[in-house]
Each structure stands twice: as structure tokens, then as C-alpha cells.
Amino acid sequence: MNGNTKKLKWGFLGLGNMAHVFLDDLLKVDGSELVAVASRNETKAEKFANQYQVSSFYKSYEKLLEDPSIDIIYIATPHHNHAELAIKSMESGKHVLCEKPLAVNRYQVQAMIDASKKNQKFLMEALWSRFNPCINSVIDHINKGDIGTVSYINADFGLVIDKGSTHRIHLSETAGGSLLELGVYPVFLAYLIFGKPIKIKAAGKLDSKTGTDIQAGIILEFENGIANLYSGFTAESDMVAKIYGDEGRIYLDPFWHETESYSIVKGNLTNYLTQDYSMPTKGKGFTYEIEECQNCIASGKIESSIWSHQDSLNLIEIMDEIRSQIGLRYPFEKVTEN
Ligand SMILES: NC(=O)c1ccc[n+]([C@@H]2O[C@H](COP(=O)([O-])OP(=O)(O)OC[C@H]3O[C@@H](n4cnc5c(N)ncnc54)[C@H](OP(=O)(O)O)[C@@H]3O)[C@@H](O)[C@H]2O)c1
Image (tube, rainbow, N blue to C red; front, top):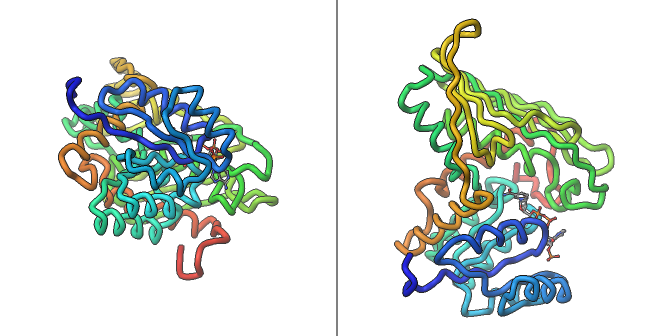
């Protein structure tokens, strides 16, 4: 983008951890600028705005949506209100990049897609791993047949997380739990490589206080293979994603969902050759999804062809089935949902 082109003007809803991390990368992308932030707490909004020299701050999300100078909203709130805020944003004439998972269930995701179409506003799930250079390079290797026919994936995302039973990451009212917070990544990787599963099997452990999952073990069966996936808050997993073919295997290094390196091992366990690849990301790696928003909006698209509306819908449908099998329904979900 050259210096004369109009910058994409962003407004942030929710000033928690991700707002800071994402802004760090936004500042590294030519063609975008943060012009307004909103928090439920005015002092917090003012502090954030002062810290980063943001021109406007608001004490409510709704007030920010009335600001005509904003082109696109970045939603970085807990999962339970993604759908409502995204729909309000699009109805207020704004494009939307919404943190993962796009919403809590397929009914909410469908309503968001409908709002995008009705209002002709861009909508994308901030599934940043889809734009990770290493992950894309690995997909190229697979498509070229570099490890033969791929038939097995093993991917996990386990961390020790206990933020107390009233924190949004654990609460059922805010759609907490390991699956929606972390498990979305391994499920995404399996979907990216194999497509939609034909069978889903899941086991989960629910927290006795909050009712949300602290562990989820998932086996997905696809037309051409099997994925063994895991998310959890009780132990740190090695965070290496492993992809196996009949001529070799690929290891995405930790943390694989944001990795900057991977290896391809060709041969068998006694006679093999390893090739290491390094691909440093621009910033932490949110830069690519920001650039995708810029490109799509500049060309008048309401969805990305790289991570489309249908991709988000397919992903949440898998997550819905996993949740149903582990017995996790959020209190605000209607009986007809999930
Ligand atoms: N892409 C990634 O790498 C990544 C990493 C972590 C999380 N995430 C996703 O990003 C989103 C936000 O995560 P985060 O780690 O930034 O969360 P966080 O630190 O807990 O912040 C969430 C913010 O949402 C707002 N909020 C609105 N309603 C709330 C409620 N009922 N309870 C708590 N907070 C509420 C608050 O902002 P105000 O008080 O300012 O209104 C809060 O600071 C989630 O969708 C999460 O899955 C993505």
C-alpha cells in the first residue's frame, strides 16, 4: 500500500490481553491504524488510549459503533458475546474481524454470516494460524506429495491454566473451557489438511465448579485418514503438531499454531533424512490476517477466500459435535441449539 492510499481505520471492542498483543502487530502493518477503543470501563479505555496515542476512547461498545470514522471492528471479548457484537457492528456499517472461535455455536455463526451478507460488510474469524507462513508452506509440501499420502495427524494444545473460577476462560456464562479457548487450533489443523470429518469421537473432563471443560480428547475420522487431537488446562503438552504420510512426516515446532519453524523427516525410523525450515513471522503473526482484511475490503469482498465464512461454519459444526459428546452446553444456549 503506498503512502497516498487511505488507511483502514480500526476500532477495538474489549481491552484485555488480546487487544494489546494484536495492536502490537497492527502497528507493524502499513495501511492500518487504530483510531478508537472501547471498554466497559471508561478509565481502562482512557488508559489504553493514552498508552498508544489512540485518538478516541469510549466507555461502551455501543458508543464506539456510532463513530463514523471507523471502518473495521476488532472484537476481542469473551466468546459468548462475539455474535451479538459482530452483528451490531455490521448493522452499524462496520466490517468485522472477530477473535476465534467466531462464535459459540453454528446458529450464532450462521447469524453472523447472514448479517455480513445483508449489510454487505466484511466478516472474518481471526484464525491467525491459517495465515502462518510455516503452516502454509507445510500445506504446499503435502500437496506436492513430499511426504507421500498423508493419513494421520497428531496435534494438541495443552497449558496449565487456572485463573480462578470467576475468570471468563473458565466460566460457562462466557463460553469458557479448553475446547473453545485452545482446542479450536488442533481441530482447525485437522480440518485444513483433511477437510470435514465423517466421524467424531470425543471425551472430556468438566470442571466441577464451573462446568466447563478442562480437558478434551478428540478423534476425527476423515475420508482419507485420522486425527488425534487434544486440548487442556491441566498440563503443558509438547505443542508439536505431527503430520504423517507414507513417505515421511512433518513436525511443526512449538507452539505449532504460531510456529516459525518445522522439519520434514523422510525415510523410516532407522534410515531417515531431516530437513529443517525456518520462517520468521512478521511481528507475532497477526500481521497476515490484518493484511488479509485490508486486501479483501479494498477489493469489496465480504469474506476471505483463504478463511471463508463456510470454513468458520464447518469448524464450529465440528466443535458443536465435540461439545455435545462431552456434555458441555452453555447456559445461554437455547434447547434447540447444540
Ligand atoms: N488469537 C490468539 O492468539 C488468541 C489468544 C488468546 C485469546 N484469544 C481470543 O481472544 C478473545 C479475547 O481473549 P483475551 O485473552 O484478550 O481475553 P481477556 O484478557 O479476558 O479480555 C477479554 C476482554 O473482553 C471484555 N469483556 C466483555 N465482556 C466480558 C465479560 N463478561 N467478562 C470478561 N471480559 C469481558 C473485557 O474488556 P473491557 O473490560 O475492556 O470491556 C476483557 O478485558 C477470545 O475470543 C479468545 O479466545 C485469541
